[in-house]
Image (cartoon, rainbow, N blue to C red; front, side, top):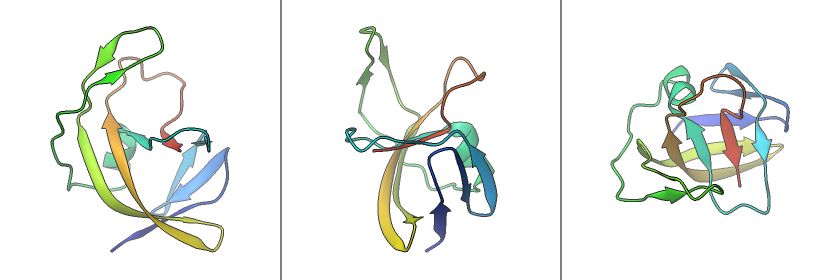
Length: 100
């Protein structure tokens, strides 16, 4: 099992790849990763999901799939984490990784 280290809320290193603009939202109950980030980390075991997400503007999107048991290291603690993988329409800005 590979461990991905998340160092902070602005710039993070995961799997040896620098990931900028990571959002850590403890009020959230969902972990989100972009498809581009998934590809950068070399994660390939994505599983289909019937889940549909309703966004704040009431629009609905279908995730690309789910990644199960990705080990995230935050400080000295390690957490097995499930991520919903999204393909954003706009690749400019935003957060490539949201931990909730």
